[in-house]
Image 1 (cartoon, rainbow, N blue to C red):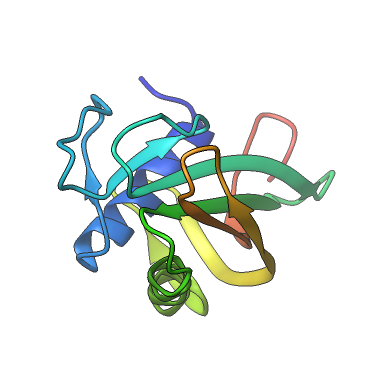
Image 2 (cartoon, rainbow, N blue to C red):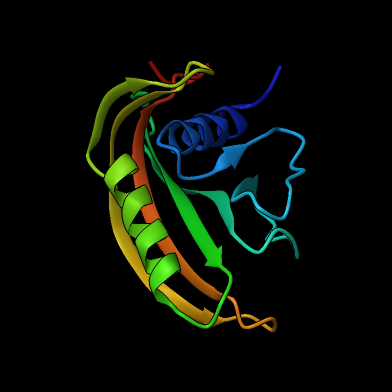
Length: 146
């Protein structure tokens, strides 16, 4: 049994993979030619990577409404910053404006919107990076909330 946040990130990874923007494997192992999708850590390889990280934003104390941030960090090889901008833009097209979607793990997204984003410059290997932050309004009932 996985937790709510893991189910949320897995569902987002599957949405990104279904849009043919990256490859999702729960093992986190990818070939050099793939754009891997991973959670939390930005690995050294492959050069092209999408990293998803969740963080709490707000929780209603009595209703089952929560907002969870999903940070999407992208990295692409090469000196040209355009490929990472294009990947970030394509992920925006896949995620921004989602409404009334139930992910594979059962997480119900009421809506998802991008709230901010920025270039992260180049890493030590001269690969360009970007970050976009999405707010997912979700339905998350618990013992103390209806």
